[in-house]
Length: 161
Image 1: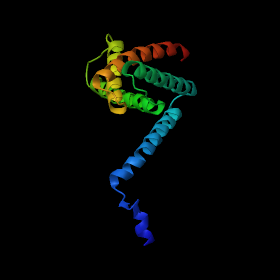
Image 2 (image 1 turned 90 degrees about the vertical axis):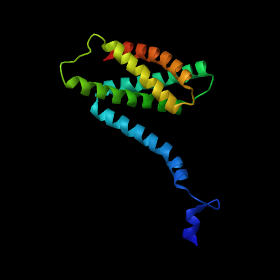
Image 3 (image 1 turned 60 degrees about the vertical axis):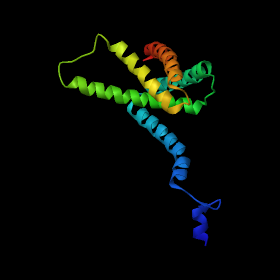
Image 4 (image 1 turned 45 degrees about the vertical axis):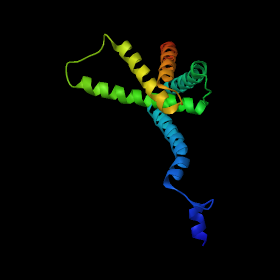
């Protein structure tokens, strides 16, 4: 009887979807922490601290821009999730691009800044659409503003390296 009571909650069975819904935020936070720890071990201390500060500033920018553009308040954790997902999408795209460029006599030196800003914009749109409760139009507007501000922050942070 006690084992049966542990399986049931509120006189109903615990569904797998309910269990995953409870565990998913914890797993996302664990993934974020593990990714940061792996980055901290791989990068020098100065680069790790600068990237952490930039990530915080970009996240605060996303919170402010989302509030101004869409009129919806977003939490710092959901904005961080959106920025982190955007950076993951950007990393996948850049690894794909580097894999493509490795296979021959191709280069993108002339358009490197434009390509990187465009890819940052696309990654931001995808990350905001997935992680924030925004329409595609709102996420694109937030991405345009966030890309510009983030690009300026990253450009300014280059002098500290």
